[in-house]
Image 1 (cartoon, rainbow, N blue to C red):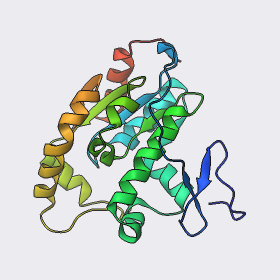
Image 2 (cartoon, rainbow, N blue to C red):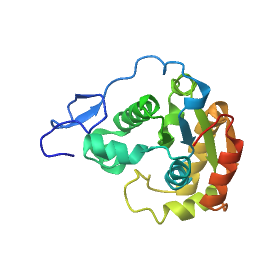
Image 3 (cartoon, rainbow, N blue to C red):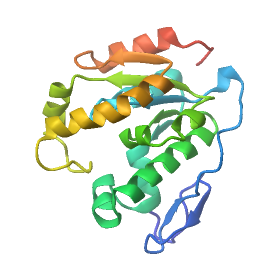
Length: 208
């Protein structure tokens, strides 16, 4: 965060109880319709599925801005998802994660958005993504466990049996990811560069 307490450039925000820091506005309705060639591209999936890695590479390939959910959350609140969840609770964290994604959808020029995994819990998600082109990155759960065990601590990982937790997350969120996805890719062992190539080949509209 900037030391003068101002919101980050380019973000429409309002003050909230985050100790004088800034956070996104509350959501209202869905993103307005837009021409197909200018649609934002959104990556969804469970935590550790590679949304940030693939999304940043895709944005560079297409010449678009990259809107990373975790990075923007840190920018507007000054806290990582793990710290925010521990201090404010998961309900607050998940609400802000969806709001951060909505800011990315409204950003111009349209970015590649790496959405937080928790957006799959919110019933507003399908409406918000109506005018986006959405990619679901699927990863075998056992492989996700291996990835998350090497986490740097920024994610709000649960204690106990991580595999069992991921199974429950997948049971709840996968149907929502499937509902909103325009393209589903197995990202278990496929390199990021190959996933980016598949996405570019599947894009249904002109892009850079």
